Length: 351
Image (cartoon, rainbow, N blue to C red):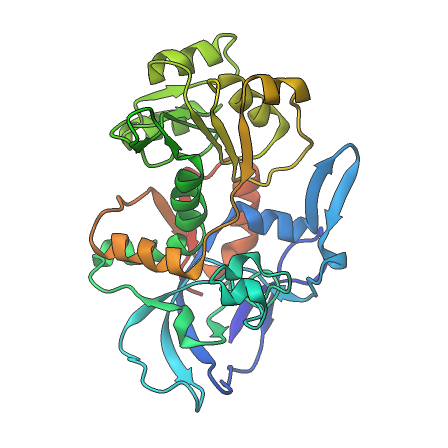
């Protein structure tokens, strides 16, 4: 098998050639047909998260061992299965759920493996999809692509992280009951991402890049705002009809956190999804005075992923702009992503 690996934090990826994988027990080996490139991969390559105030969360001290094959947004075909797998259709393509826990703790037993304190996340704690093969510990983490049209199948792996993390989880965490009792929200989406509208209203999109703002409008956003504008908050309020009750930050930087916080109406919810880094910029008294809720969203559970895949198979999820690259272009793609040059999503799809 061929793969692209992090051999040293802070250094470029390097290619490796290894023996083909052999499954054990309940393991399943997939031939990778597509792997999404995520901004989280940049943090892994760098070796940690910026915590602000000169602090950093170091992955080397958090159980991430090198060399590591990144990639947690993976689609593939079964090439081998362990003796304890049982019946598994090898003629189908599968999307892999990557946020795998230890499988034995109370958190995993509750169905929230993504919150396990001893994670085995594919592409982060164990080898992932920047390779021609990937090892999955159990077939329960495989989800059939089913009737998703062929032109969308290469993007299906994005549901494993991008779709689940950003669309479903961010939206659920932003829900807030209205006076009528209906669960609706007036959404505002932060820099470099869009969010599916809820309550019948399209989102307001905020991005510093005019090309990405145009792409968001084409995808159905009701407005696209430049956050550098002096009246950015007023523009968001005007587009939403009033101060929104939800802001979903897909960047997680100090500047986006400040703007998201300022844009919210009283009683609103600010959901942090992105991991760009930094420290909170908010005045603490204003959180209480404005009765705001601030919360994080870290992917979604295996059950929620199954729900998301059913939506995808039913055609309820519109395709997003994607560009395909060769596996050996992974380092160049990461550099383009770091430079803000990727519109939509990048996919590694072949050697």
